[in-house]
Image (tube, rainbow, N blue to C red):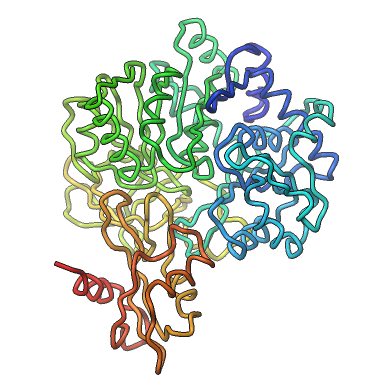
Length: 549
């Protein structure tokens, strides 16, 4: 059997048509329905002129249609592209141009942005509007100056696309801010991802590692016969890798169920209610920004005399932000029998994990490196364990082809060292004598706010476009929930007196909400080095010095 998501999912749909593939609120989508709807959408995409290699931009919040669109694209060997639904006009247009989108599937509640962007989005052959249950009745058709179709009309108006042969060399594109300075598409081979996921997940469920698609079907059968089907809930958006991979792609390879939240923001009570209602086995989260509210939420429910059944929850996968030892300890205290898998890596690479259970010795930032990971100094020389030296972590094996349309960044991040190709995104670690890696930080000014990547230069340029701002620097400041938030240090334009609310509104109208600074401190001179480059450390000190004691 082909090492391909669509081929494996089709086989699973044939074997267990009545089992549930997707849940959101009162919606329950069986595997038969999931395959049928995805096949009809695949036929519609093909009728619009899409085929192998075509990019399908998915500009949706969490919903079953998100998974159906990715499945439909895979069926015709097209490439689904995750697009951050928080992006505003210019950010959205940049992604559509960069990925060379030929189709855009979006929530109708985002139609205003689509209407403004569509006339400039060259190459898009079809725009598909998905009705939004949170904002029903949005008339996205009359306001869009290009050909548009409603999602449900396409499903009803097409017969299922015939099944075809596929290859593991098809592409899968994951857009990330990452270490690239701007959002870039990380290009994987589908076969690489399938092999990677099948090697990782079955051992977590008590099976030997799986490398073959046919073996994945066998694991799915055994889980079904043993009455312990894999049910996963991503407590984060599907537009992020951890949500998409851990919440849908991986569980579906084993015939499992993806449970999607209905709320537009994290609602801990909803998460724990769904864990109970759906018998969730695995949660996917983005570090402390998600786990801390979940812990407080479960404690609050208990204090109110409500005790959701979390006994079937066995796995919690975290990636994208730091998960502290304190949060892990609280999880283990609240959920007996839970295994926490804290992943160390990026969209470009998985360096290792730290797996803990109740009673484990917990340390924040400690990870066990993968067998294919190495640590090198800046000259490409190995850093021996226990030497006290620090180095950049690198990994080989199941790594991407590179960045879409960006050979410069590809060469920078994907390096050949001693004849071996490694992914080296810029994460610094210190190796201890026991071989454990202690994470020190990323070799970049990138700000990680709740798993969202914010690049200072982008926010700075928007701030400086305000008539009252002459110069500025943007830094990350500590935040209990999100890890870091964005803050700005600025100088006023001559003769101007910036009003903070006006400056922040200026940014809010141009960038996604998580990029908007929590505040702007106006100083006499923005700190820069003699060569004109920013002094972010000094800017951080200035910000802290101006905060109330």
